[in-house]
Image (cartoon, rainbow, N blue to C red):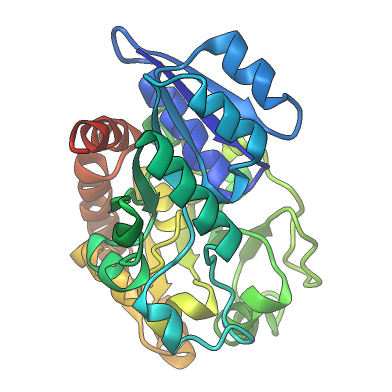
Length: 330
């Protein structure tokens, strides 16, 4: 079996797809390739690899990609797709930055499925229950929507080691821009006001205009930061707080690395049970930061439960098996 997985840049979903590649590459009888659509043409990717399964994105389903799919009637297709469902009616799109399928994307998918029936499913990283509202219109064009949640790459994150360079009270990895800042600023910034009150180390691709910004961090060292920091906050984007279904990648990585996580309150995070700590407000967040900095034994116990939960249910190896089952369930 040959699986071609497309990627369109370095962001959370690139790392997720790379984790799938790592998991599939360890399976007997499976050959997998990651296709960077920005540097390799569709014809070269498909002709050079001749996949049996293609995992792509609806929003990158160009005429060339469609042609490559149609030329291979045996090919099974799974596509990451934006929201198309009843929930869209409730959202003020001028406020919330949610990925929606466009009319052109839906029309392309409808034609492809009608002509070939090759699309086994579309997927998104929301919990399964959310898809009944966010992706329920896909069924009308003969395409099943399913949940493939974020996960932790065990090869990358499960072997974290303590590193004195990353010892700190609070360690955070992530970008900053105004939309995310709507949550980051009330939760995290008050902890940065009095330099020295908390030992905070922030890493990320975008410049943070705070004294605690330490620049970029090597991908191979992120796990060691998560393990070495006393607390690794998880902060969500505004739409996740409002609607509760967007479970981000950071929690899976922190827990897999053995880190202790305090997160803002998003409905989907209830799945982690007592493996993380939830803060209901910025004030509650700070109070829990202070409490758990003084209670190491509780931190260690909670982090251990979180790691056990992720290692059992939410690794890239688990996801790879789920993906293969989705193709069988078409």
